[in-house]
Image 1 (cartoon, rainbow, N blue to C red):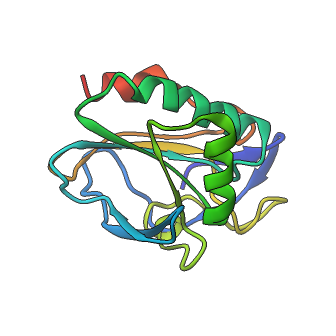
Image 2: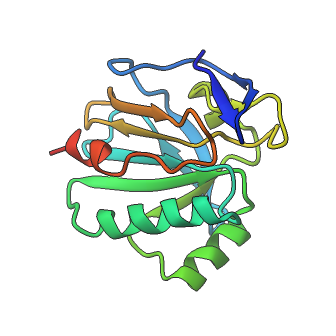
Length: 166
C-alpha cells in the first residue's frame, strides 16, 4: 500500500489496492436523492472518480469545483465526486456551489467503495473517511489513471486524469 500522510503524519489506508490496468470493481453508492448508483465496470463511457474526505473542507470543495468546471467540456465521460458525507449535505453543497456537471455519491452505508478501491482511512484524525484520490475508468471498465494523493491536504493533478481520456 502506498504511504499517505495527513499534515505530514503517516496514516494507514485499507482496502484492496488497485492499479492502472486492473478491472474497476462495480460498487453501489448513494446519490443525493438517496437512489442507488453503480459505478465501476464497463459503462460505455469514461468514468472520472474524484474521491475526497469531506466536501465540508476547503481543499475538497476546491477539488470538486475544479473538476466540475473541467467536466463541462467532456461529452464522453461521467464525472463523480465520492465522499462519506451524507447525501443531503452533498446536495446542499452542490446547490450552494452551483455544481451541475458532476454527480455526488456517498459511500456512507457500506464503505464498499473505500474497501474495493483501497482508499479507506484506517488511522489518523480522519480515520473512517476516504483519502483524497482520483481514478479514471475507460469505457470497457479498466482503470487507465490512478492518483492517491501522498499528502491528504494537497490537491490532486487536474490535467493528468483528463489527458487519460483524450
